[in-house]
Amino acid sequence: MKELIVALVAAVFGLAGTVVGAALTARAAKKGAVLSAQATLQQVHDQATVDQSHWLRQQRLQAYEGFLAAWDECLRLIDTVGLPGDSEASEINPLKEAAGRMTERARRIDILGPAEVAQAAEELADSIRRDVTIATKLKKLTEAKLPSAAERMTNETAPAMAAAREAVQETRRQMRDLVGETNESGRPLHEDPRTAELFANFERAQEVADAAIARAHEDGDRISAFLDQATVIVDELKRNQEARAYTRERFTTAARHTLASANPPTS
Image (cartoon, rainbow, N blue to C red; front, side, top):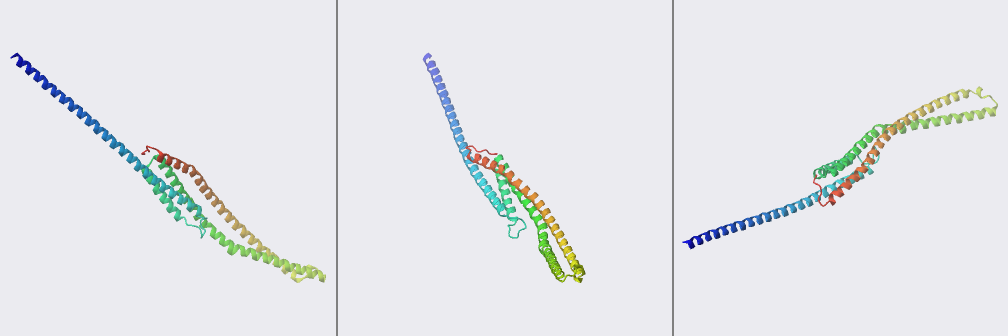
């Protein structure tokens, strides 16, 4: 009987050991499976991060290149636009359209980021829009002032000046001839009946010349006023263009840093 009890106890303890061993084995297997799953998830996450970074870098590269292409187009149009009002000069509309494309591409950069690049892009686009506004202002001023002044000088002032000059020269020639004749005849100049008429003609010619000169001064004042206004606008345009040189450098530096970064910023 005693041997039976001992055997039974041993069997119970053996079964308990087996159960405990199985439990420990199962726990170890579960822990290994969890660690394996975590490692797999980490690999998937890391790969997704790499893929996302690569995708973001490519999208940014395309956006930056597109923006700079629009920027170059705007600069080309600015260089070739000529003086507004010139019939052979390019129109403002192409520059305005190019500035619109530049603004659209700046908005895409604002979506893709990072903020430093997006801010510089928006400032550059805003600078080009100001160029359009200033150039349009100069165009309107030129169209409003220059054609009428040029037409007046060409069709009125210049012919009046030429006529006055010819009248004065003709009167002086007649006076010289009369003086020569009176000197030869020995008769005093004031006794010749033509003298009074010549002096009257000379006075009329001088009045015409004075009027033409006054007209020329008026035209000159109009042109000077136009040039003063145009100079103010051109100076404004130059200041705007000079100010964006630093912004252009900021954009280039930030874009290069972003594209060269192993972990590009996401915002």
